Amino acid sequence: MQGTKTYRISFLFLILALLCSWLLNISSGSVSIPFTDTVSTLLGKTPEITSWEYIIREYRMPKAFTSILVGAGLSLSGLLMQTLFRNPLAGPFVLGISSGASLGAALLLMGTSLLAGYTSFTFLGDVSLAIAASIGSFLVLLIVMIVAQRIKDTMALLIIGLMFGSITSAIVSVLAYFSSAESLQRFIFWSFGSVGNLSMNQLILLGGIVFLGVLLSIISIKSLNAFLLGENYAQSLGVSLKKSRLTIIIATGVLAGGITAFAGPIAFVGLAVPHLTRQIFNTMEHKVLIPAVMLYGAILMLLCDTLAQLPNSASVLPINAITSLVGAPVVIWLLVRKRKMMF
Image (cartoon, rainbow, N blue to C red; front, side, top):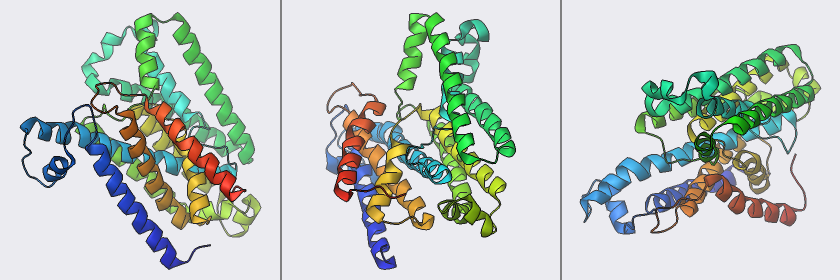
């Protein structure tokens, strides 16, 4: 286990890496903008071409901040699930919350016969899809919370969550089978995940959701550390299992559900980043792991989004594909190098 001084140096390095990743992300895109002009625009100066300022401030900056929120939130929710279930394969979506968001989006985009047509939601504007996905994730979260009150076995709760995910995925498949090609295409594009479609108001709302999830996680630090040694040990320390489990589930639901509603289902990050962080920091202390996984997750999402932006091209690769293609080899290499998994 590292010392306090080493942790400070590590966090300083991560903050510096986050800043560099953020600048790199903002300076990359379909329109080639010199790095010096990007920096000067961020400092409040007018660039050589005035349209560059609009591109940077109205499109690239919100997209970069969205990447930070999405990466940090998904990584934190993955850490919460892996700790609660003491299972290295647990991720932010094991409780079926992401599948609930997908079901809400699918009902809006493909379930025209059930919802009297997509056009009936146009009065909600661009937020209609986010609202539908949020309602779906909230309903699944509500069911999971009710079940969590009745079940004492954490592993049984994990299995039930996976079953909820299977049920909602099956309904989505049925909707996809009967939907039109246009509706199916819209849903597929949403399922690819994206960090570039949020307005400033949506970004502020997403920031509030992530802040709430982080706050609940910080409150649960003592419980999270105790859960690592088993529920009996946690109970002996005076931890209320039912209350702590519920708080952790709500925090995960808020993070995973809110992010999926606004950015789509983004895979891999929540599963892999906690492992990566534990291996590098060599600790199980959540007072260290919570800020660390958030920083690593934010950096990973920024870098993946930068790679997804094909230079000087209007095409953007699916962020889901990039997160797995970039992140998976890194985790495999790290685990092979360490020769063991911390848990």
